[in-house]
Every structure is written in structure tokens, then in C-alpha cells.
Amino acid sequence: MTTAKRIVLSSDHAAIDLRQAIAAHISAKGFEVEDIGPTTTESTHYPKHGEAAARKIAAGEADLGIILCGTGQGIMMAANKVPGIRCGVCMDTFSARMIREHNNAQMLSLGARVVGDALALDIVDAFLSAEFEGGRHGTRVDMITAIEAQG
Ligand code: RB5
Image 1 (cartoon, helix red, strand yellow):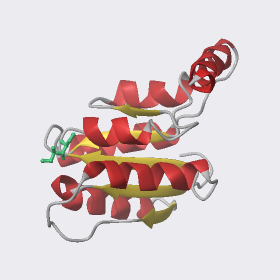
Image 2 (cartoon, rainbow, N blue to C red; image 1 turned 60 degrees about the vertical axis):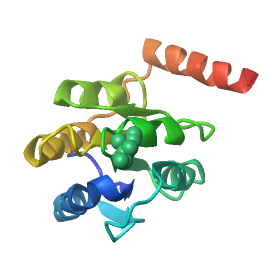
Image 3 (cartoon, helix red, strand yellow; image 1 turned 135 degrees about the vertical axis):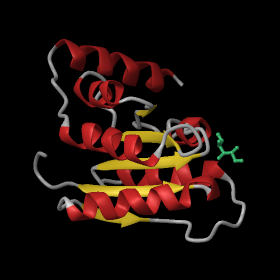
Image 4 (cartoon, rainbow, N blue to C red; image 1 turned 180 degrees about the vertical axis):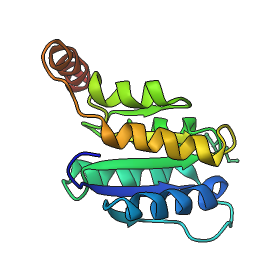
């Protein structure tokens, strides 16, 4: 693991247990965790939870984010609508490492109904231990940002 970072977590109702398991897992590794819920399994709407976590990162209140819903897809789409946010859904550890190293993603999205808990924790570890490589990858990430700037 690299230097401790502030990690924001959020999910919808489909991923409460896995989100809390991830919070405990990364807290034990020394990360500073802000789990912004929700805490009950009452049905809720994933866009607001994805947005809330993404806004924390956009505001500089967290360094990286981990968000979850049933598939990881809907909450990822919502997070990516916040300007400056790059979030990828990962179901394997290679992709989780690459979205940091090549895409400088600040957010990882997981599908609690897709991946098992043990794999999810490995994916989280891969994401949090990787660093952006910059260089040619920086040029490409800047191109993503330029697309966003065009509206
Ligand atoms: C909720 O039933 C489900 O639609 C949500 O968790 C997520 O999978 C959406 O992308």
C-alpha cells in the first residue's frame, strides 16, 4: 500500500453489507474512511449516492472514492456526471489497477450482485495500491477532460 489516503464510500441499498465490509477492510489498512451511507437496506436511488461521493472528491474532501450498487453501473454513471470525476466499474483486479495507472480514476465502482465479497476486497486493494503513471497517459486523460469542457 502507498501513503494513506482519504477514501469516501457510498452505495445504494443493494450493497450495504459489502460497503461496510470494505470500510472495515480498508480502515484496518490505515486508510482514513468516510462512509456516507446509507445505513439501512430501505430501497433508495443510486444516483444521489454516486453524486454525493463524487462531490466529496470534486471538492477535495476525499482523495479516492469507492461506490457500489447492484451492478456498479448505475452509480458509476451518476458519479461520472460530476465534472472532473473519472469512475470505472471493475470486476477484476487488473482493471482496478489500470484505471488508476492509466486513467487516473479517482473512483472505483463495484457491483455487489456481480462480484463476491473476497474478490471485491482484492479489487479494492488493487485500486488503492496503484498510482497514476502520468506521461502519455496524462495526455489521454487531459483529452477526456477537454471533451468534458466542451459540454
Ligand atoms: C437496484 O435494484 C439496482 O437497480 C441498482 O442497485 C443498480 O444495479 C443500478 O445500476
